[in-house]
Structures are given as C-alpha cells and as structure tokens.
Length: 205
Image (cartoon, rainbow, N blue to C red; front, side, top):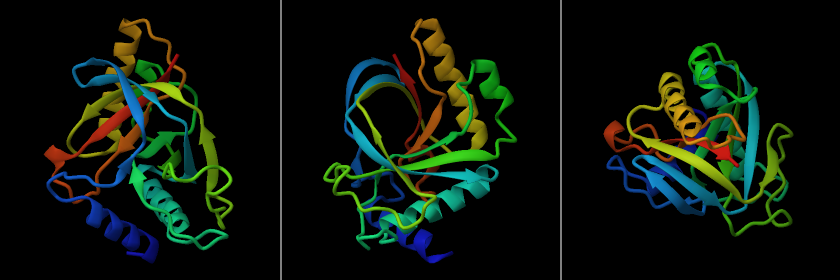
C-alpha cells in the first residue's frame, strides 16, 4: 500500500471502528423532510477538493483516494496537513441520468469524479493550495439534496441500484433533480458491512 493511502487509512482507523462508531467531522446540514431512509437536506456552503479519474470503478477508487489523500497530508503549497472529514463523494462524469440510464450505466463507466469535503474551519482564502494540478478546489453553495441511506458493501452495482430507487422516488414526488446521483461514503473498508453508512445524493430544486 502506498504512503498516502496508508496514512489516510491510519487516520480513518483512529476516527472510525469496525463497529461503525464515527468521530470524524461531517458536512453540516439540516433535515427538511424525511420518508423512511430518504431525507431532504439543506446543506450549508462547503469547500471540496476534487479530482477526475479515467479508469474503471475499482481503479478509480484507488487512484482518487491516493491523489486526494496526498493533498490533505501535506501535498500542497503550504505543506499543511488537513483533517479528514466525511462523506467522500464519487460520481460518474456525465449527463444527468434517468432511472433507466442509471441501470444501463451500472457497468462500463470509466470517468469518475471523487471529492473530499474540507473542514469548515477553512475558507477559500485559507485553504492550502494543491501542489497537484489534478486536484481542484471548488466552492459549493448552500443547496437542497435528496439522500437515500443504505448499509452493506459499497460497489458500483449497489450504487446503481439505490440511485434508481431515489430517482424513482423523486419522480413520484414530482421533485425536480438538478444533478446526477453520486455516492457518499462514511466508513473505511474494514467496517462491518451491516453497520456501514452509505448514501446516494441528488441535488434538487
């Protein structure tokens, strides 16, 4: 295991456990409505560090984590370490999907965007500048997001399956979606699958 990922897992291991107990800071939001495992949330403005990866799902995960972990562990102009926060986002880099397209595109996607949420103690003027030009800092305004929570393994097929469920729910509720589905992960791989917190997020009007 290379150094950035090893250090990232070490940090996550200190903040998480196999029992699903989390201590890492989470992006701030307010729950506006709830329907079982589905929530409508209002997220506060945030900064993210993101990177685009040309690879299949499995390879993209390793490449993206490595690149973003290097940034938060001092791979920046200021050589400053940045605390790990949750969730970690991943989405396919393409158009907004319909329910059918979410199913059809379950396999074979080779262009991904992975993002780390930056701690709220930073703003656009104080956040360290990435040394790697493939790491981009983006300011995200406050927004409404539909989310669907589920447990178990995090893989491309399950992301597609739960994306279809959330897309169908939005259609039934006549809620306009403003983004394609993205995965939100809160736990490291060694967490017991039944206790993992995985989510699908879709920006809404």
